Amino acid sequence: METPAIVHNAAAQRFEARIDGQLAHCDYRMDGATMKIVHTEVPPAYEGQGIAHALVEAAIAHARAQHYKVLPLCSYVRAYAARHPELADLIVSR
Image (spheres, one colour):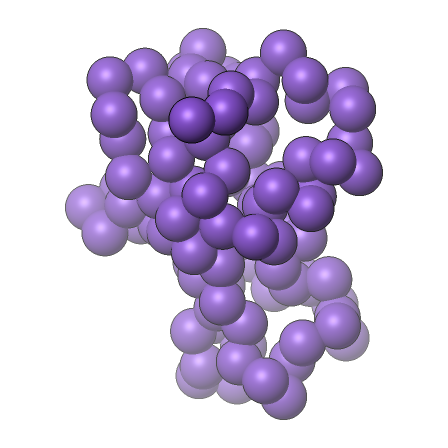
């Protein structure tokens, strides 16, 4: 499966992808210049296909472009950050 288009829904504070009418999303909350990524969810039928990875990648690219720091409250994002040491300059802890 090709990775679906990722859309930044700023009003809902999340990055979204629609797959066969179903919503996958990576939710965040802003705290000053810190993007707290709070939850990432992919419909069960589409797990393991790189969609969560693409959502988080888009969120982190947005944070970098806006000069935000990222506080990964979501377990998936914490694991993603641990696998990508090149993000160390963006990642903050509580």
